[in-house]
Each structure stands twice: as C-alpha cells, then as structure tokens.
Length: 92
Image: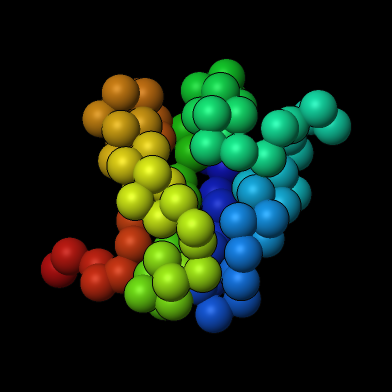
C-alpha cells in the first residue's frame, strides 16, 4: 500500500501539494502538476493508495482550487478500487 500524508500547515500552495504527491508516489518527470494530471497519475497507480490529510482547514485555505481538489479525492474514492481519502475531522 502507498500513502500520501498531507499536512495543511506545511502545504502552502498548489505547487507544494503537487510536489508532495509526486514525491510520495514517485510520479514520472513529465507529471503536469495540475488536477487533471493528478487524476491521471492516481488512476494509473496499481495497488491501494491512501491519502491522509490533517489540518484540512489550512490546506483548503492554501489551495486555489480547493473545491476541485476535494471533489477529485471524493470521486477517486468512489471510482477507484483501493483508493481512500481520509481527512480531518476523522469519523469515529
């Protein structure tokens, strides 16, 4: 299983977000660093992937396309077997 840990206090921009995904999941050098490219790379990964986000209010405040990012994570959770997006506040 592959994990991506997103801390909204440390991710200050869209570029930081994309860099975090690229590093954690070893994306190819041609990764476009936008939501469409993120969708494509996440869809292409074989095996389970879990994205864990903390300090999500700060994360959303730092992203210019925050609603698009959250929608992408929710869509992948529904559509891609083995993909999970966990974010604060965590359900009990």
